[in-house]
Length: 114
Image 1 (cartoon, rainbow, N blue to C red):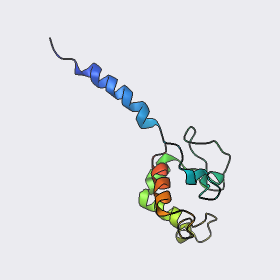
Image 2: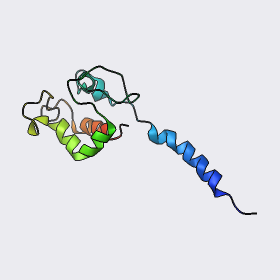
Image 3: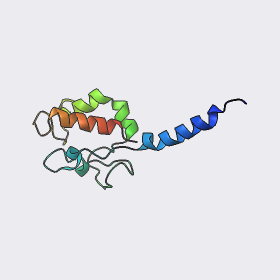
């Protein structure tokens, strides 16, 4: 009797897909007013966090975040005035609003968005 690996592989794939498509909750700095409070200016993809009508900053879509890359995201959060001196986004790292670990968590979250 031949083995039937296909149904087993299909079952494992079905279990893995929902886990791969889920994003984690936004890190605290994303929501806290005294920290990054990113949600005040940026929108997230539907289901990736709280819904907002904020439109001051660009929409934070996963494809765009991955296109920017982790290093560029980190630089933009650290000090966006380097790339755009006229930006209204605060230099979170340079002004020590966020520490290195908080910026790293934001970069990880943004890079994983759908």
